[in-house]
Length: 136
Image: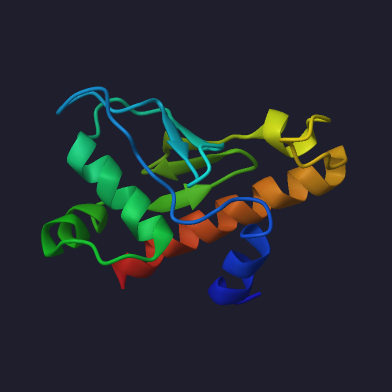
């Protein structure tokens, strides 16, 4: 599946663009959320600056990022497993939103477990590829 097709599929669940809010100029919110405030990712690495976290989110959104960020991201081998995105083997982002995906309220998706897992897997694939595409 192409990145465009993957994004279109993910857009059925999460509303792009994703956002990285902050409590102040240095302290990011622990969550990356979609435009409707649903959780998409949780940060697992607090050593990454707020500026770089925002650029990671911009890259996942397919937005333009700075040349400085492109140089920084090239230092890492970016991989993923069934729940995390890793930079050089260190967990950075954890895909989230299980309650939103499987919840039974009017504000949730009401997906069965296998479909919810499939969407989380697709999100990991999409985000990892968006980041690794900057390393070319």
